[in-house]
Length: 204
Picture 1 (cartoon, rainbow, N blue to C red):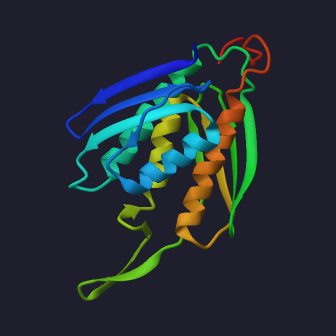
Picture 2: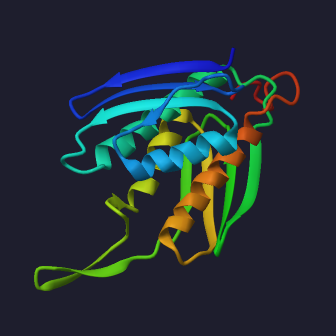
C-alpha cells in the first residue's frame, strides 16, 4: 500500500497531508494561500496521485512558512509512501509547454535530495514610497517561494530534481509549467515497472 498521512504542527503551521501514489485519496486542498492551492490542484490532476492537504499557517506574516512547510510535509509523505522503492522506474524527465513557457524537469528517486532550479522568473518594478524596487509576484504570492517549496521537498523526500526553464515571459505561466512538469515526472518516476530496487547497491 503506497500511501502515507503526515501530521506536522509547529508554532508557525499546522498541516495534515495525505498521499496515495496509486490514486484513491480524495479530500480538499486548502493551504490558506490561493496560488499555492492552484499549483497543488494542478499537481494532483496531472500526477494522478491521491492527494489532499490542509494547512493553517501564519499567513498574516506572509506565505513563506506555509509554502516551505507544505514542501517539507509533502517530501516526508513521498518518502514514507515509497517505502523501499521496489520496482519503481526511478528516473523520469519531460519537456513541458504552457503557452509561451517551456520547462524541462528531470527526477531521480535516488535517496539523495538535490535541487537544481534554473528558472528565471520575471520581476516587475514597483514603487515602495519613493524607492523603486524589483519584485516577482503572482498576486500576493512571492515567486521566490517556488524554489523554497522544492528545496524543502527534495531535502525531506531524498529525491533529486532538476528544473530548467527553456522559454517563458509570463510569471504565472512559468510557475504553472514547473508544477505541471513536476507532476508528470513524479508520476512516471514512481511508477512500478518491475521488481527489486533499481540500484546496483540494492538500496535507494
